[in-house]
Image (cartoon, rainbow over all chains, first blue to last red):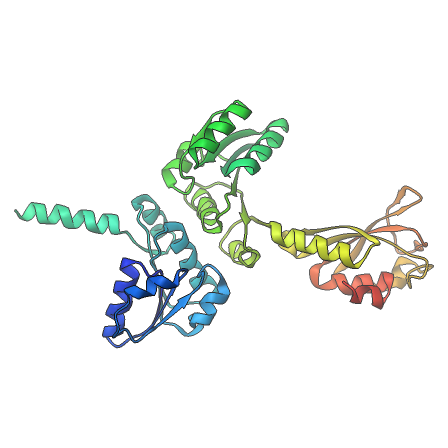
Length: 133
Length: 225
């Protein structure tokens, strides 16, 4: 698969590394070039320094032929916006956004955006582990 | 109308003051605490100090009752989310978003925002117009720039002078809405002849604007657009 990842923070760099290790083609975009330092030496993909809310930057990353786009910047609204831009302008087959706020995630899930909410995922992990003790 | 305005500082202040004067009922949402207090004091009205992109904040502001939601923060993504949550989750009938990046205008429309305002686009259009054609005194893009309204004076050497409107053969997507002659408005009909010095209000689809101006002022003027 060809996967584009937006945001090279902890989650973005983790995902980029994992998909690259699995043999997928990866392009990762972040506004700040120094964030690419988080990527290991064996990362085989590309980093692009740029603002992914600008359609031209997504085009440069190859969005027209990518199989999936994961928007995982630190900002919920940026992720929601980029996810919809990929879906609406570039017909990206699989689009997902990280959304920290559970209420916002649920609103966008109901609007057909795949919103992954770390708050809910983390919360349920804690609850489950505690129930096991 | 009941209008929710979400944004920052000076723009919210002036919008709120003008709209209140027109007797609209308003609810303001401003994220920055200091700006929020300042607005509440100057406008003498309650201002919600919170993140307007959060569903609970929009709900508390009355999004289910609002006739119109104006999203005028300086962040395009925030404005999109404010409008989408208001419209699609809370059923606000009409939403308007400000965009900083003019490349977002079309996308916002496609994502269901009723009206998208790009300050950069408006200013660029005005500047280009002012710089190239002095006879053209005002120009307003409508429907996100798909419709152009242009007022122009007919100079003596214009090819349109002495022709009737039907002889002009304007392109299909162009229409002369009014003619002003010696300060008097004329409602146009096909048999009205244009005189030098007439002021013409031209309404066109954007793609027909250049050609329509060519018919009125000559190809050279249209090329300068």
